[in-house]
Image (cartoon, rainbow, N blue to C red; front, top):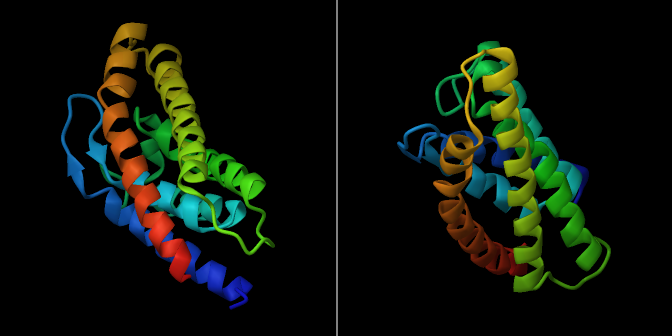
Length: 185
């Protein structure tokens, strides 16, 4: 089946909604909650071409910034002053970068399917980009904008070490789901 632009736009909107739902599936943690946003954003990266998966994350960010309470702690333009905002921006770039890795491995016009390892490679790139944006923004926000200050160790502990194991598990589950779903669609 040849996939049309309408097909991809529909699936993009679906993933935007899933990322929003994922914000409310959470486990509270000291500084940043553990949510399923990353799972659905990564799944979009695995199942959509890079520009559409990045668009799903961008649309999610835009909808939250205009005031829809779809972020983990609400929504609105004031959300740019929260530690988690950089991670949300990172979803956009991460989905494009992860999608780029997948498309280099298996071009869109190729009839082959990505292998488990291809998804893992894209997932690792996705996670790295999200953490670079998230940690960088959080550090900048705390130390240069709000004046609340955060040291490097608390930043790494709360923004990386406490959340990375969960994100790696979500990456593996997203990979397993993508391998199965990609065979069907």
